[in-house]
Picture (spheres, rainbow, N blue to C red):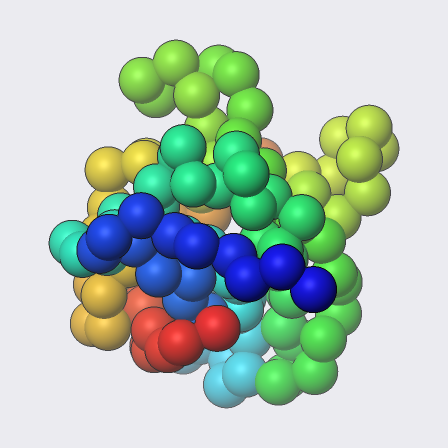
Length: 134
């Protein structure tokens, strides 16, 4: 198997997002969130150019109570803030994507907060719980 070489400063990382408090959920449920693989640069931002060559490795798991509820891929789609949107896609073509709000602008570093719009259109807040080597 050929070794995959990434540009200097870019690494494949496993990002774990945990449900955070928001106005709709004053008490988040433990173990709810996402775990995904993405090429992150030195500042914690997703590197689009590297993702284009490694998209098959960029999977996502939606977690409910710490158990994998759905498996899919991190995808980059036209439209949204800045002309494109990062999303979690569980079944291509099924319209079940969950869009990350401004994922292109947010650094994925522990302690930061991000939002995800679920397939029903509701926005939820998550805390970056960990970022580790993939």
